[in-house]
Amino acid sequence: MEISGFLAAMLIVGYGIYRLVLVRGFKSKCGWLDIDLRSSETRQKELQLNHELELARLEVEKLKYGAVVLEG
Image (tube, rainbow, N blue to C red):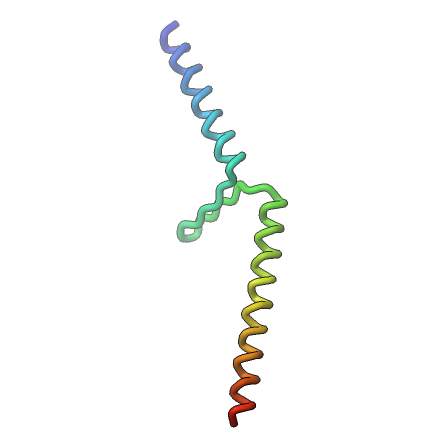
């Protein structure tokens, strides 16, 4: 009886940790192992922000090269 109670407590704790990971979002990459437990909305938002960051970086490069052309 004691072992089944302990097992039930461990299952409840394990389920709680599992739910916490899912709610908080989890992404990990270690070598060839890649774990992504985030929602699809979170992944889409990350892709959108990365795209906007890349566009801003390209705009800065464009302005930098424009300044070099004007100097020369």
